[in-house]
Image (cartoon, rainbow, N blue to C red):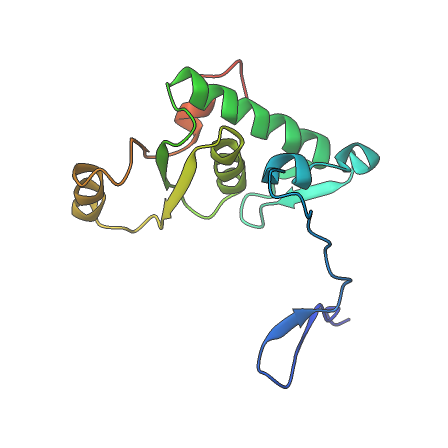
Length: 147
């Protein structure tokens, strides 16, 4: 049994999804988080995220709740709108939670892959490229009311 084809390369060399296009909001003031979760209650018990390595999964209801908890934890750490937060995280189910938690606060997420050199991270922090640096988002989550 083969995998279902999910994209196709066009004549221009660009891969495009075979699914219908997503209609983006025309209102420039609408933020990403309400847009992303706008219909989540209609499929709250459906799979939203799956971590192939750990086997951990989240439904849309769990996903939305955990993003809010991450945002709350970051807020308790003093992160605010406009702050730049560096994410040092392996590719895991926590990454989208961290990213969207940061965005929900109006902060700016900057990602650096896990094997990034320590000196490079220190350089960015010294240069003022981030106002907060965390080695893993679960630290912020621990500051919230529970994950």
